[in-house]
Length: 162
Image (cartoon, rainbow, N blue to C red; front, top):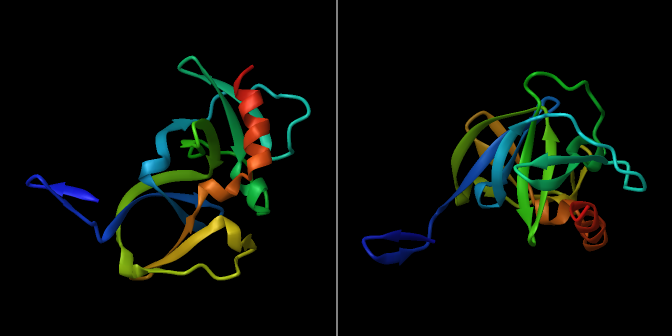
């Protein structure tokens, strides 16, 4: 919804942060994103899932850091100067997701978004929100609320409370 001249209008677009994993562009709705940070040193935490790389102290908040490629089952690649951490807030929990780069904010018309297929380039259906077709680009929209299940969110909340 958007407020225009004191009236509430339903928006026909979504604001999306575009990021890259390997050779594919992905997106997440801006409303979930708190910030995009350079990857700093990560403190490892024992007895966490393999995709949890550890925690960082981000402006006084202990924030779990998740390797998004590993979580999605994608091949690993070296981190570079372009690597970023997208800090999101999900159900009151802050978490950071490592991506290869984060480079754009787009307004995507809702009519450009198609339902998610069962699997797209190895990424499971439940992680997908949809596929946006933009001219010559395919943008995979992730549902970060599904990337972590409730049990994993509970584990991360304990890590966040260190």
